[in-house]
Length: 126
Image (cartoon, rainbow, N blue to C red; front, side):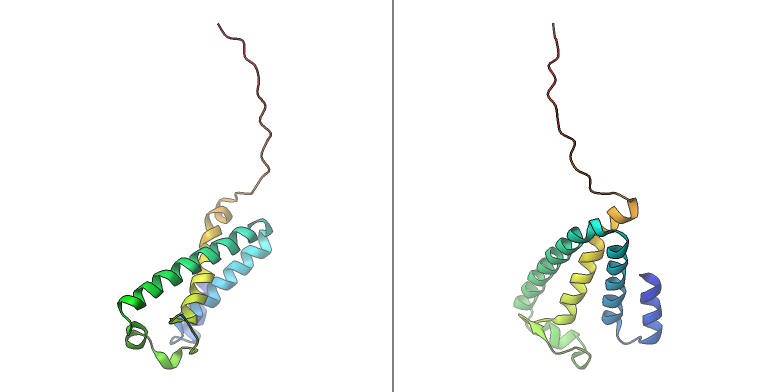
């Protein structure tokens, strides 16, 4: 992910958010190819993080309605907004949520296993 991001930054230094989105999406794709058992968790974490990020961004826009116009380079954006949130921000949130949601499980090699049935055993006591 870091190598992809660095290479894209050298190629297009003025498109940092797009470089980050591509690098994170490539990382998510690699994890998907190597660990299919993490795909559902990856999609779930991407959805949850994107939802949370969206709500917080909309809340920011309620407090500071001119935030995007003042601090974003509008000509570099796609021009698509969801409740005032630039699409790029939502794409970043989804790709980051997909990667960070499964990063620990992937790096530690944890796998989902089926539960071992629990047996009650009668123990003789005093």
